[in-house]
Image (cartoon, rainbow, N blue to C red; front, top):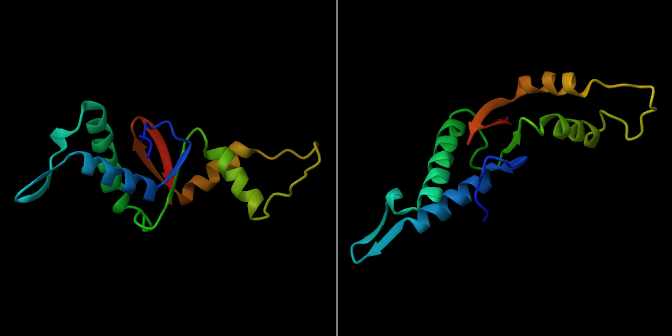
Length: 129
């Protein structure tokens, strides 16, 4: 799986869970007495990513119900586009509006943010429900 940079437009919490497991595998020492994870075994780049993912997980697990089962995290800069796609997909916006009808997409998306929780991840703001 690719690293989480904080530049993703959106991602699913299950991808973050999978990436945490991958990084923990990289940082696990297998010896005769069993296995033991040690974050200090990760290179600086992986360690920063791991720490950010753990912080996101800890914050999200207490604030959204579907972290474990899959919740979409939408970046702040992509939120308006994503919300307009959702509204179109569920039929709230017709596919072909005449050019003289103007919808304030920013205001509509801003109104929809009330149903979302804000999370910071690697310097980017994400929204999830």
